[in-house]
Length: 248
Image (cartoon, rainbow, N blue to C red; front, side, top):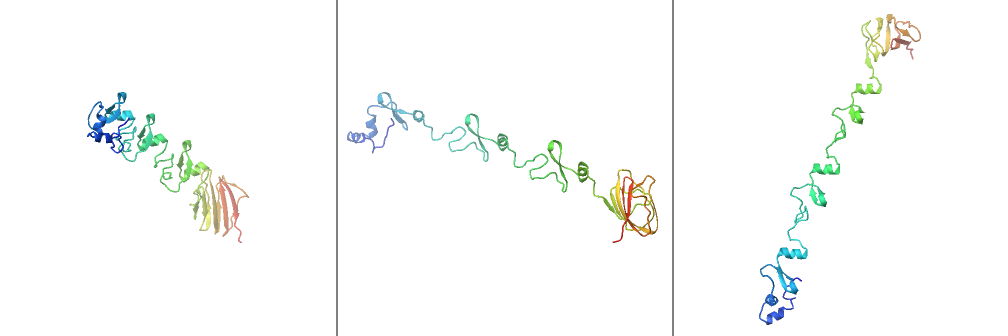
């Protein structure tokens, strides 16, 4: 039992007044074990009123003090003192905080700025523009130069485009297109080391004497060049095909 000292509700109030006592004095007449201010009154032995301290009263009522915490949560609803920390359950389910790094580990998550192998957080691979992408070791995305990419794909570079033949007797360039602007008169072709290939378009001069290396092979026979005539010629690994370009 908890004492209600509200005079309007206390049935002993009238009796106390008639006896010339305060209501509390009337209640205390049978005797209360202990005395003092700010004490809670409970029924004690044989139903007699007795006092309890605040702590004893809370224990009897299974109540918490007004200022109390719930595990890691303080009485004013705070967990720790630092702002911006994520909350996690800890040992026994107690609420606690983690740093951002600890939270990412717990969640198996990556930071907002991160990379995926060779691809960085903003989707870039390296810093140079115009490079082809390939998978590298263990499938990691990497870049290659144009030459490296051609080699990996078994491709050749675009042929060089030239407008003049090298000096007579000097080897042609591999992987080249010769669109010769001047007339070809006396000229001795020479080949680079195999494998090689090149293509030529030229017009002969009024006097023409064109020769080939002794190791040259021909498709369609050895050409007989005519003066002031346009020809196309393809050479691959020392094998020559020559055709006169017919007028339209």
